Image (cartoon, rainbow, N blue to C red; front, top):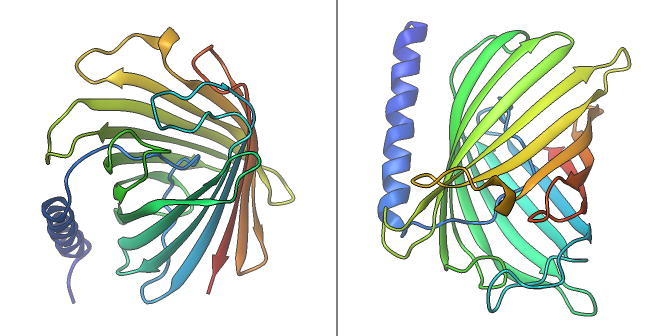
Length: 263
């Protein structure tokens, strides 16, 4: 029987192989990200799941960020996400992006694939860490470049009833692999589990700009969400929140709702 260290080394080698394969198969570029802070949840090996992401900009800019983009105000985004537990530490996923502008029919904005790794850890308390890689081919409506790549670092700590997590996200936008500027944003989550089993807390999403030229915070999006999380029986879970932009570069009010379904 292999030791925990040997199993971890095998998982890391598998992760490296999958990341390398994905990067060889796709040009690198940034992609729109979900309004979600990644934690240590993984689907059991051999099992499937679906998350239905719903985001709606209640109040935002009426001016597109670039020619061909959608103006954010009153845009509704529906993104089904399908995922499969590959091993105890690896999960594979597929996103299908859609958006609907006021007065228009829904648009399909392209697929994204992802691979998520979470290192073995105590799931009830203490620290956890991992990484998530996403690559997608998205439309001009949601991204100025056709290909998008995001590498997300995942770290968190549980000390019941509290949970803290942080994601460091590196995005690059180019049709050349590993080319173009790399941008950075940091997302955080702080939550408290109530006696009834619900988690209540806050999530923050903060763009920091190009990694080579950080610091122009007044020109970059910063949004704070009040959120709730709950398991709805054995097969469903919920993450919902209302977000408030903290500066002029952010949408003013956003609603989000993520329903998870486990088969």
